[in-house]
Amino acid sequence: MAGIYWGHCSSIGNFTVDFMDWQGTLTRELAGATKSAPGKNMSAKSGSAHLYVRVVESLKAAIKSGEMAAGERLPTNRELAQELKIDRSTVARAYLELSQLGLIESHVGRGTFVSSAALRTADDKIHWPASFSRYADGLSSSINKLPQLSSGDNFISFAGGIPAQDSYPSHDFEKIVLDLLAGGRGATMFDYSPFAGEPDLRQAVTSHLALRGMSFADQELLILSGSQQGIDLVANLLIDPGEAVLVEEPTYFWAISNFKARQAQLIGCPLDEEGISLAAVEEHLIRYQPKFIYVMPNNQNPTGITMSLTRRHGLLALARKYQTPILEDDYSGDLAYDGDPLPSLRSLPGGEDIVIYQGTFSKALCPGIRLGWLVGPQEVIDKLSFAKRTSDLATNSMAQVILTEFLQRGLYQEHLSKVNKVYAQRRNTIIAALGRELSDFPDISWSIPSGGLFIWLTLPRGVSNRDLLEFAVAEKVVFSPGDLCFLDSNSLNYLRLCFIQNSEERIIEGVKRLARAISKYLDHHHQERAANTIRQRRNEHVLI
Image (cartoon, rainbow, N blue to C red):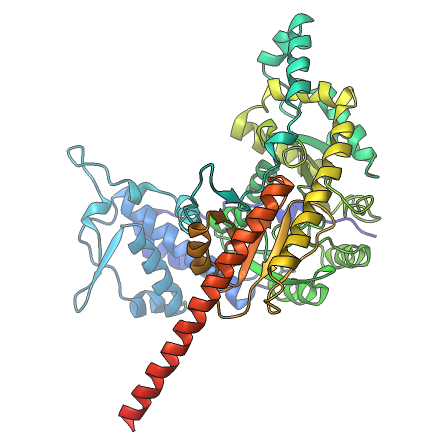
């Protein structure tokens, strides 16, 4: 079976413009952009996204270079669309973003002009929003969705995604640090490490993953500063603005934020009890020709669903059929409560050259360790290694040396044996508590994960988790609103509950508080609906 050709997956910044004549140059650029690359037919939606990005970048550069002066009138939507031979909606979308950036301003009846605030002199106060990149603007739009959660000793939080502090192996780490210093190995902790990771840690990670049935060459491994860096590096390598990425829906909020900030076109695929829908995957692979598929087969965040073995084989077969890479995020694969974890996509037959596999020690060990790994084809790892060096030069040496000792002494496996028992019991506790406290609400359901950190709770349709959160805060309990994990903000009847960060006693009390909040909120919600119905009937009577 032929291996994937990774060359066409790399992002290429090939849009260059001679701003001596921005309209003429842009016309020529767009004429070339509308021609499909060999073997790749651009969908209408994807093509529109590419054109919109080019219009924004061209005008932005022309304004910042001074070619377009403050107060200069821009062509109307119709005029520019006709000149560039593109749809008016594409121009309108570009103008809207430039307006949000503070670069242009529109006046009814007069037209659209370059904003005076967009250009500055030495005597003017700098207008920073005009300098922000589209990446920064994308991040801001995502972060604005995050709620400000209350905290304090009296609050019980199910909102995080981290282990419990009482599970941190602080004593073991303290002993390791003292041993390293007493043994004269302090210098290795305070110097730069090799950009691909400390050799001893790389060997320890290789041995650990071998226990999970995974084998790979040394040059196919890269040590990361946590798995979030892996998402960022892969996005840098593969995504150009306007290109499609397939994701599970719902999915990890910070992955959504990262991809959207790079102007990716995110395509969601629904989940069932076995994982991602293969029918949706194939439909979208054909229609959008995405750059890659982002999935979490084990303990999916936020739903807690673990992809079945049959579904894993099916997803891998589709990826190979349509020559589309997979980014497999195994963020909590070591947290397994009902037997051994299923094999990763990377370790299945045919996964070696098409799957980029990443994992982390943060969820099973402690978040502050900020160390993870990434395994992929050598040509991909070579590119990612260089990208990592431009980002942080090298991963934290002190953390690497300490973690190496922790792994080599067999302490990590001991730690996993301990915390998996504790977290399994906490999972059982929260499921039992939900069953007791929410027994009067048959329309409310929740997932039962086989590992990981999260319970996914589904409320009746038509209610709002954001409104519920206000009632929950009054009861001194908080959760993560599930709409953060969708590609739009319309899915408001979901909550994500992290069950590993609280003791069993606090879980029981927290669920009681949550149940009271739900009861009060639903009563309030039903009263509001009834009042609205009465008002509508009165209005209908008046109209009649």
